[in-house]
Length: 287
Length: 276
Image (cartoon, rainbow over all chains, first blue to last red; front, top):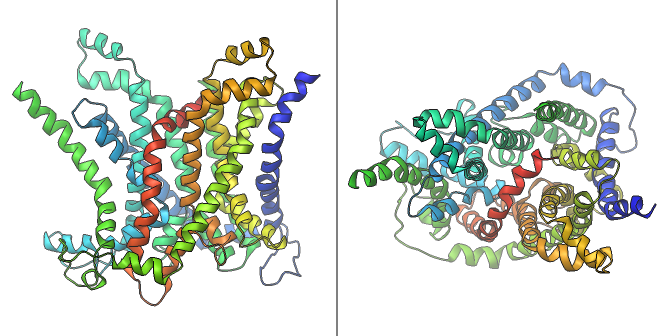
């Protein structure tokens, strides 16, 4: 009897806190999403069923936000992963100042999104930005470009900033994965006459597979949920050019005061992400 | 020998330098901008190399704005979030690593899934909740909000660390007559300490860096640095000098702590997710 109770005594504080801070809010969001809740009209909260969801699905802005979210996640994670992987492979080689390089490359990871947003907004500024200045001086640009203020370049600019933030994550996690692969495997492969590509293809990639899958999943969820960087850099603009799904949900509630509609959008985002997570867990179980 | 040196230089060292330049230069540009007078920053074309260096932006930031107060608020919130997170997570992680009980797997996965919940899903009802409790704009509200991510993250990482400590050690202590709590205090915690510190530092940084909760659940009386910095932008024209000085003051402590913590964290990050 005692044995059965003890673990629950240890778990109780965390479970109670989670129930209050996470479970209750999630249920509350579900409830809000089924009601018409306007922040400035606290007395009337009529039940509207699935109307908020129906409104979202017939709203062209929603579909546009979903499309932006897809572009945001695929480009950001794709670029972070590719460059992070390259950096990890390079850092896995032996050279004199490797420890220094390894420490310095993580710097962007530690910075708050707000500051990353500020740094890149400052560097991309139309009049005072160093990137426009260098671009014009080196002849890459014929004139200053308002990177964040025009529809065609705003998304690419915020993706550049999030890529900068995310490369260290992949570089460091994949490097740890690379160092866990036994050196003997490479030695045996060399004796068997395998080339660099063969070793990469048959030892490195399979050895890294789980680390890659986990890192990609974590980062994807994180990037899909994150809205602070975009909020700081463009606020979703110009127009709605950089408005992703979480940002749209947030702005609908925060600036629009429409908590019912915002909650419905948040629930839709959660369902989409849960779909991804469940697929991952299910596939890793199979393996 | 010479050829090998050249291959190393061209194939490894120069590409790495490229990556480092990309990672470090924007950061350096912020710090450099923070020690230049406003007139240098607003002159076009830009002088890449500064003629005058000054601390005027820092002096102005700390004397004429509420930034020192904001730093204090951030510190209180972050310390609170770390304390709350660790206090709740340590016993929970111990339970997950040392007991086999019904529902263990489900609960562990649950904490992992919570960590992936969209912030917007939690932040809207937490705002409504804190408002109806009259807690909006207090340290309490913000520390509670930050616990939504510090707690699951701490449990996930700490469970991994505890599992790395052989059960036989605390069993031996208990055979020798120690109670479970004594075994925990005298055997498991000291061994897990480096991991606990790393997790604590990481939680501190995530709370210190957080923006959305700080914006929504607080922002007037309790204003953290991230919210304060963002507000500098709205006022009339952007004062880049002040912004860059503030950005430097906020990011330097986070970066230093992160350099200490990250080595231990990396293994835990990807390790905990795959093993059940």
